[in-house]
Image (cartoon, rainbow, N blue to C red):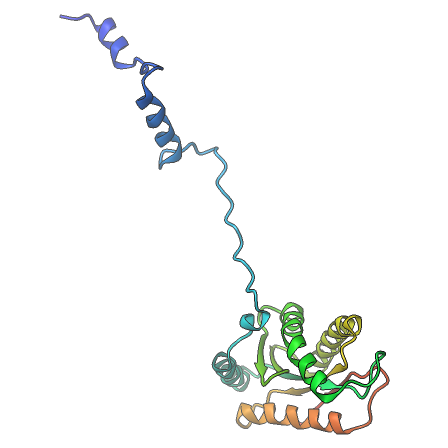
Length: 218
């Protein structure tokens, strides 16, 4: 009968270093569910940004649902919300001279993506941006009044104008703001905002080519 001392030695003996199976067992132990607690965990890589900035915008369906939901919340809890509409408009001329109409159309298609990126980056995570038409955008701003919305629209236009001037694009941005109504259908507020923008488009041009109309009838 083997002595207790010799049995204990055999029971806890390390595997031979020449045995390749020992290395595989140790690696599996360290990399598996028995990994050491003090071992650093790998950092998850952030999700890659979409190649097309337009794909990061809310769909029309999501925007309309959010609009109705925000209108219902405003009626129930008496909370404020605002709508901003922005449109790309051709300028009469630029530093490079007057552009033919077909060139202006090409520019409007080219700048839609960069403008969408600036808008999405410049709003809060709770705000919703969607694209209407070729170069027209709508922004839903929960918990915001028309003054805060107008300030945001001016800042977004200024950010876009920096890039447009550098590129020499013969276009400019115009915007209109209106509060989200609590009494009627929320689509009426969107319609009022676009009507206010039309008044800006047909009104006298500003010195810097950018203007924001505020509709306070909501």
